[in-house]
Length: 77
Image 1 (cartoon, rainbow, N blue to C red):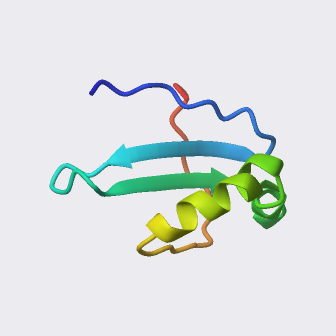
Image 2 (image 1 turned 90 degrees about the vertical axis):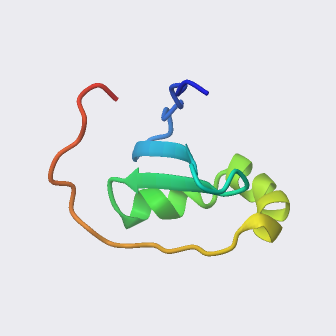
């Protein structure tokens, strides 16, 4: 499947990628980058995030949040 561009029109969201695992067709990776913790907190209070939780919670095998500073972003995004 060719990659499609993901809309990141949400304020404070620098990057939101959805990756399909090559070795496990049932495994999907989400990669999100926010400008700061406040932007992440705001995202987690949006209507679309809150509405999706009951549907996606049972599918989540693991979840990890890291705190880091952006060193370089792809300008093509």
